[in-house]
Length: 63
Length: 567
Image 1 (cartoon, one colour):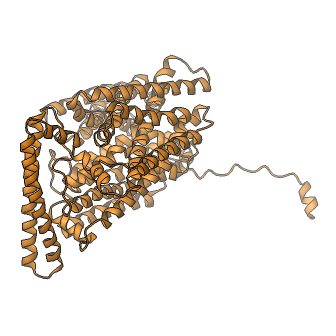
Image 2 (cartoon, rainbow over the protein chains, first blue to last red):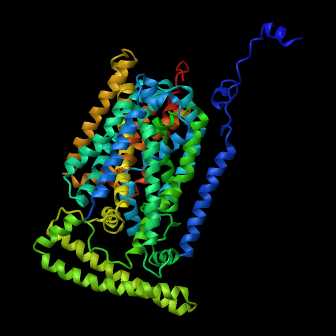
Image 3 (cartoon, chains in turn brown, blue):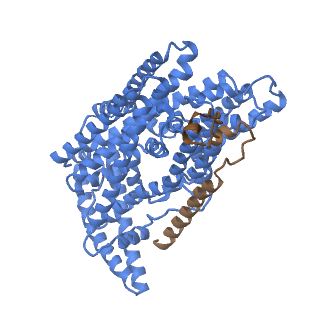
C-alpha cells in the first residue's frame, strides 16, 4: 500500500492515553496504602535516620 | 552599627527587584485558578522552594543562629518529625486535595463532614494565622529597628507593605514565583556568610579547631536521648510531638496547603514536599551551625557584654551606668583570659598529650563560666534599670556579628536575605488568610458573582489582612508577655485541627457532629494543659489530636453516623 493511499485511510479513533497520575487510577482500584512511592518514602526516612545517627556521632566526636 | 552606602544600595536594589519580579511573574492572574492556586501548573522545584520559604521566616535567619550561639545545636531535634510527616501527607492528603480540585483545605471538610465542621476549622485557622501574621511582621521588625535604629512602626509597615504589593497583584502565582527566587538568594547568602565566618577565624585556628572548641563548650549538643516531657528539645519530643505539629502545619494550615496545591500533578506536589522532608533537617542544622561558628569566632574576638544595643545604651545612661562600666572592664579582662585559653586548647588538641588536652579543656570551660556569670550580672543590671526590659538578647547576636564583622557588600546581601525571608512567609500567610476568608466564609454567605469578582474580593481581603497584621504588630509591642503566648499559638490550635483532618482521612464511620464535639472538647483540653501543666508545647499537638479522635470515635459508637451522609 502506498503512502498516499495510506494517508486516505480513515484513522482509527485513538484511546485516550492512560493517565500516569496515580490519583486518577484510584477510581478503578482501591488505593494502595503507601501509593506508588514506597521506595521514595523509604529514601526520605532513611535520610532522616542517617541524619540522626550522624548528629549523634558529631555530638560524641567533637564534645 | 555601620551600614555602608554600598550595603544600602544592595539592600534597596534587591528589594526593588524582588517586588518587581513578584508583580511581573503574577501578571495575568485574573481567574480563581490562577490567583488562588497558580493555575495548578508549577513544577516540583517551585513547590519545594515555596514550601521551605513559607516556613523559614525572618526569625529563622535572625534568631536561629543566635540560638545556636547560646544553646548549641539541640533545636535541630524539633524538626526530626518533619520527614515522616511529609511521607504521610504525600500518601494521604495530596491525592485527595488534588482529586477534588480544592482551593482550600477546609473545603474538603464540608464534603466529608458538614458545613459547621468546615467553619470551625477555617475559623480556628483564621484566628491562629491572623495573629501569627502580626508576629511574623513584628518580631523581625523589632530586631531590625533596634539594630538599625529605625522606628518599629515604620519597619512593620515596610515589611508588610513590600509583601502585600505582589501578593495582592498576582496572588498565589506571584507568591510562588517570588519564593523561588528569594529563597535561592537567601540560601546562597547564608552559604556565603558561612564561608566568610570560617575565613575570619584568626590565623592558626582552622575550621576543625573551631568545631572541637565549640564541642568542648557544649555547643554541638545535637542529640538528647533522655525522655522528658518538660524539655522542649529532645529526640522524643521532636520525633513524636514534632511529627504531629509538622503533620498539622503542612497538612491543614492553608498557608502551606496552598503551596503544594499549585503543583501541576500529584507527583510534582509529592516531590516538592519530599524535597522539603529531605533538606529541612540539614538546612536547620546549617543555620544553627552558623551560630555555633559565630560562637567559636567570638572566643578569639571580644563580644559585647549585652547584645541588645538599645538596652545597653539605656543602662549606660541610667542610675547603674558606673556599675555597668566597671562590669564591662571586668568582662574585657575575662575575655582576654578566655582568648588565651582558647588558643591553648587549640594547640593542646593538636598535640598528643591527653593530660594537657584535658587540662586545657577544663581551663576553657572555667573561663566560659566566668563569662556567663558576668553576663548574668549584666542581665540583672538591665532589669534593675528597666523592669520591663527585654533581658534575652539572643535575637541580636547574628545581626550584631553581621554588622560588625562581615565585609561591605555582604552586609547588604544578608539584610536583603532577612527582608526576603520576612516577605516570603508574610506573603504566604496573607494569601492563605485572604483565600480562606473568601472561599470558606464570604462565598458561603454571598454566592459567587463571577471569577473576576471573586479575584477582586480576594485582593480586598489580602489588603485587609495586611492592615490587620500590621496593626496587630503595632499592638503587640505593648504586650510583652503576649509574645510568648503567640509564639506557641500554633500548638494551641494545630492539634485540634489535625484531629479533625485525621478523622476525615482515616475514620469513615465518624460523622460531622461527632468530630465537631470532639474538636471543642480537644481545644478545652489543650487550653487546660497550657494553664495547668508544664509540659512542652510540642505535646499539645498530640493531646489535641488524640482527644478529637477519641471523643469522635466514642460518640460515633454511641450514635452511629447516618448512612445517607455522602463523603
